[in-house]
Length: 283
Image (cartoon, rainbow, N blue to C red):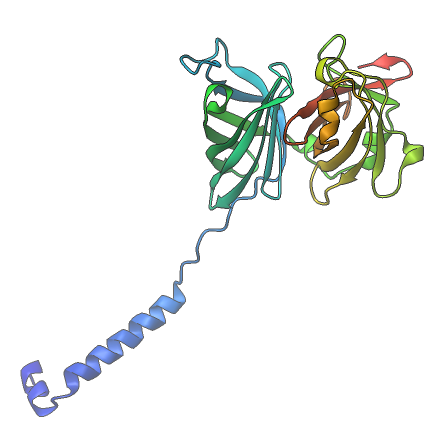
């Protein structure tokens, strides 16, 4: 019997077949449902061999050389990047959608804020890299790559690692622009550490002292830091004396012998890399 004859004898057959076909499709859809991709997790410490290619201050040509000591710390939508040799710091916030990031950064040059709300776009390869583009001018106009640190420098936080040192000395600068750090284990209110300055800096932070806290961030290789400045020669530093930021540790000469610190108060940037100083000297 032909379909024409069937539809003549059963006029509702085409509608019935269509309904059955729709139900079949719905059933198949339930079986092969495609879930949206999850957002990449960029949390962690990014070691000091990242690249930064930005423009000169007049924004007319690239800087003469690529910065290749860029390191970063990322947690909970917060990004902090540091080039200690170039005295450049980038502090920003971002959101993640799949592998893409979008946000803004504030740029600090030679410890002073120079640009705010600079557009940031980029991509995450989880556990490997963050690549991004900055949409400002000068040091805020260009691209960067952060390289995720190996497991030895991205393990769990270890407060004893930070506190076992007698002090931490800035790696660059003679005299250093930022003060020494002293974090005595005897002054440790668990789970945090009390941190104080163990010697004054120079330039903007001339004669600055401070007191503060270092708190571990669970599940990361990072620490939250907050200090209050006192006794600075430049009284503008004391107008907003509270500085907040992130810290991490990295292995260089020996295990966990480098401390990376980025703190800002919105107008000034107190950041740098420190080396451990024991009784026998600094590494």
